[in-house]
Length: 221
Image 1 (cartoon, rainbow, N blue to C red):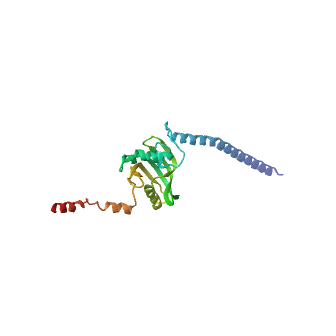
Image 2 (cartoon, helix red, strand yellow):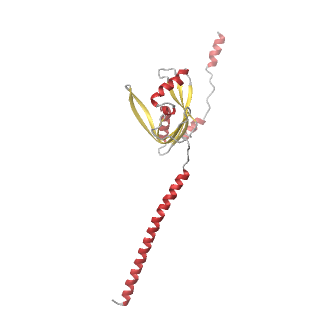
């Protein structure tokens, strides 16, 4: 083999060897950096987390009876004694629920020959009882049906968005066949659609005057 050819072969071998060395070095560096990057990400996650000395209970989907200071099996008895027993119109706040719902799923359950509808919300939720101070968190939540329907409607109207809320949950004695009802008081007024906001701002309700004619008629008599 001519000397020039030999030199070219040697040069090619040296180039390949150098490329191989560089590749191995980069791989070693990447392997060394990966644990460091993972450790840094873990450290960031820990620093971003909040410490709660009292602790937050995370077990089953959040339901309103969980706000009461008794097991769910004893919830009705507690409500009858502490709400219904004080007479029609008695209303107490039993807790607060905040959350960010991203999905609403309708469910049906048969009870005593009737089909009961409810809405399962998925997202991130937290509740605190005002009668026991227990705090719970979960990714699933069952709110009173009236308010849950409003959340479901918002998610249907604005697909891909989240519905956020901050509400107080209460119990009210009704004086009816079903002696109590769950109530919701919202502390956030979210902007609705532009069309609804324009309708809302068009006018203010007139004061009620229905009692005035009756009073005048009584005086004339």
